[in-house]
Length: 411
Image 1: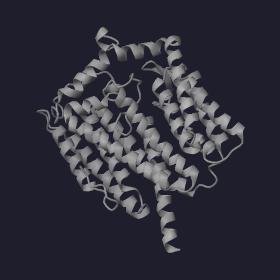
Image 2 (image 1 turned 45 degrees about the vertical axis):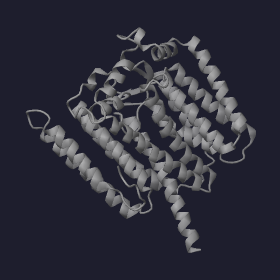
Image 3 (image 1 turned 120 degrees about the vertical axis):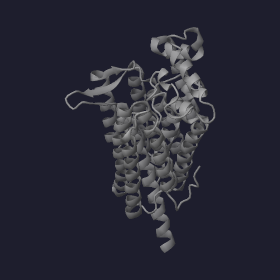
Image 4 (image 1 turned 90 degrees about the vertical axis):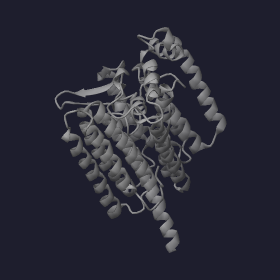
């Protein structure tokens, strides 16, 4: 769709995508929706602001990643406005804040010193957030993973924020030769985090944490047999948990036999599959489909709504944008000489990629549905913000690489 060269941002093409999408929504009913066109202008303004920031402060930013993130957000904002205009408005605010934090993260991380030895801080903060959620959290969608601040009218999902501390903690532990007890602490931190998530019924986050830990561990220590041993232990623990926790049995049984209970346990999976293929290659058209029949159509199952109304081709393009982020992120990590920065770039890339695979795998019945969001696309403040921060980490390491290359050329 786009020639993702190092020298172009393709913001004009993305702006056209916004304008056409919102224009279709503005005229979808007999009553003209002027608010949709106002949002197209807001989206174009967001692109223009990014263009100014990038040219003023981030000349060497990895542009393919910026293009991919912007396109994912464009699809998200348009489909959410079509599904629930109020959600589309809120998502616009979260996306604008997310882009700000992405650039702030990219700039601030490049300035920080001695952050590779603060594993106690990262582990302590991460566990504190999870423990607070486990004790005081509210149950939403069957998982006790939300902190509701009623006085402020907002809800937070701390397990999303812990993703950053997981990447920082595990990377700082395994980036260099440490005393043995430090390695043990890193493993214990990850195990306790996963256990708390399983007990809170946040199975998607638990799976995500473990796989990302394995990726960073293998990249840091380069020990295939230890990595495979850890994976084997996890498979055994997952097998045992099937018999210990009823909610695990429900998820697995719904995955294996959705048609045995199509009106209850299998309803979401079945409706999701029907919705995803009903639009065909080019979709039924914005506002013409019926994606609301699928539970969690704005969060976990937003990919089915996109496929139904924008087509399977758009679904494939979305997967392609995630592939671009993964490819560029891995390339950035491989070019970085400092092992800590290489690991946080690799870990952030792995987190976004694995999260995408887990949710799409659940929707497509490749694996049990675990209830996590699609990065940059699903509705939700916590998810959007953390996805942008992770992208900021990757971009920061990429800018660090460019700066080092310029120093070598000058020398």
